[in-house]
Image (cartoon, rainbow, N blue to C red):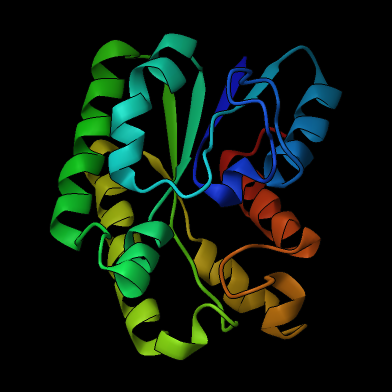
Length: 204
């Protein structure tokens, strides 16, 4: 079984060697690699790239997904599409986000007809990055999360609601226990993501 995780810095998490998909970084992918490989013979790959928007995924989708021929591919994308617009006005609006995301899914289904696809919805918490533009950040990330959910329903895919997972976690500890800045997870936050993925995919 080959598991592939795709996305931005949340998935990347310091993996460093972008030519080696088996460099899994120090975040939720590493946590899942430990559990998955403990169960038996499988491969866990990470091709997340810090700073990526959905349009960046499209550019590198063939070498960083299709050519790797995963059995299960998980995608977490969306926060940079908002963040880059809020900070520098070069984000990806919701309409284009949905169009490009749909292309990724369509091409994956065509090239890898037996693959299981897991979409994880983008999330935010209060933090140093998000608080100055909280209403915009939250509402725009919510739009992209809802797009991911709709696409999961349209294509018959698994969907992991990470906003719900982080909202639930914040009933026990405040936001800065789970994310450094409202976007990037702490070690505990990566555990939240790994746990939410495992509950959905249920390989354990």
